[in-house]
Length: 293
Image (tube, rainbow, N blue to C red; front, side):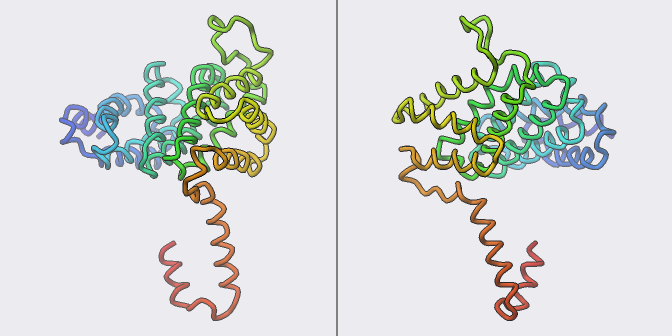
């Protein structure tokens, strides 16, 4: 069944390619999981590059293909990760570039799919024998791209996931698991004592460029706080949020999306409290909530 469907998709003109083909293979992989590992290269070859060419020209064309493409990629990452490890360096770069493109997207569900996929990839590579090789290639790029969307004021709904990615990176670099230098040995005139010190310095330079109105001391204190709070997610998240809302770029904006997670928790607490009081919520409203969920 694979070859006729994949061949037809690959040969068709972009407007004739059915997005349901992407959904079909995502569903198959989610159902059969690791049994599909050997088929992933054929799927990749038939749908990956031609679909990317369709969806990355702008943020508007082929909306159905966009989400279904990243859902397929997420299914592969979740259930057939060994197949991704076997990809060539150019193919893996194509995957990573597509994930970065996804979380840059201004459509919330595509950006969130990209960020969740990125987190899964980061965790899987951390546990693999290719940990050093992968992070040496992509650590700094991922950090730079995540800080770019975190600080641009257009991607606030992704704040929770931005924080989780950064926490993962800072915890990893301080864990000692990365035993090879993250810096370019040929370009840096002196060796850093360890990757943690290098990433601190790199992050200070990166954020000093993003926030030119802040003093070097303010940026350095913020970065030190990131490393100090990295093992406590709540403190780490609050530290980043406080930094953002105090910045000139965010101070005059509506920042409710940065507090969306806490607001959702509070709404659920209020709902549970109201449910505990007999008669406060009509039975038909409770029934409607059950249907919606």
